[in-house]
Every structure is written in C-alpha cells, then in structure tokens.
Length: 171
Image (cartoon, rainbow, N blue to C red; front, side, top):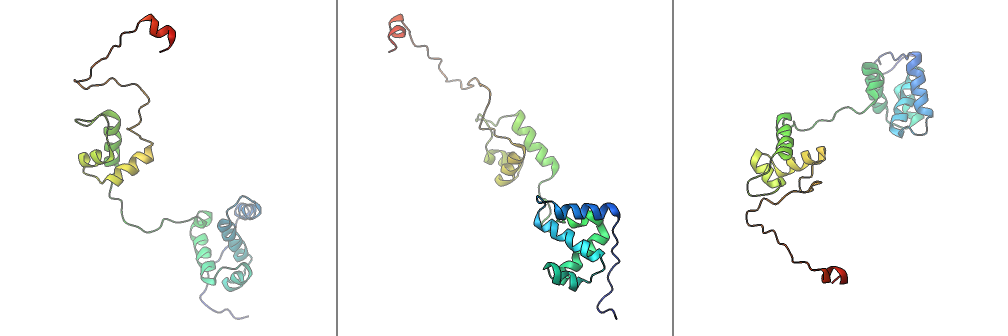
C-alpha cells in the first residue's frame, strides 16, 4: 500500500521503555493524560499511522504526531509537560535573598516587624513580589514564636499590689 502524507520519524522502543510505558498504562494511579500519551507511543511503536492511532484512542492526528515527535526527540522525558512561554522573571535571585535575609535579620525603623509594604518600599520591589517570596519561604514576620521585650521607651512596668486576701478569695 502506498504511503500518504509526510514521512514520520521511525519510532522504536527499547525493552525497558516498553516495560515502563506498559506499566504506566496498567497502573490505576497514573494520571489519565500520562496514560494516554503512553498508549499513543505504544501504538505508534506497533507501526500504526497517526490517523489510525487517533481513531483508535481518541485524540486528533495532530496530537498523535506531536507526541510521536517529542518521544523520538526526548524519549520518555518528552512525554512530560514542557515549560510554557511567559514573561521573563523580573525578580532576581539576589533580590529574593535580600528579602529573606532582611526579613529574618532586621527590623524596620519605628516598627516591630516588617510588613509587605514596608519591605517592598525598602528594597524597591512590588508588594505582591514580597508577599510571594514570603509565602514561598514560609516567612511570617507578624507571627513570633518567642517572647520579645518591648523596646518602647514609654512602656511602664506596672506592678499591682497583691495582698493575700485577693489571692485566697480569687477576686
């Protein structure tokens, strides 16, 4: 039978790859998207065309061709999700380190702890960036696990007179 369409890259599986793919297909805990990709590769390795595999398994012929090409290029690692396009990072690793060290090792002037706004203003970042960094590192400067002495110069240590009568009666 004459071949139609563009020629496809030859897809051959090693014994280890075939065993791994079949194992993922059989396993009940495998995500369905991953299992479908494994079924596509196994069917393509049997020699079926993209149209035949698509008709048999349900995805479009274009999707079958995409998974076939990615498997040929990257092998099993190509079946995973690739990084998606997006804007470049605006916060550098050095800025992240600055936020973390400043949060843990210093306090702002005229305050007891950092807020996202005060930290952002201090380091020239956005408030949401500081918030994301704190969340990623589990930092909560507003929560303290240790007792801190008050540094307020106007704090008055109040001592209440206690007499035995109040202690015994519980009043």
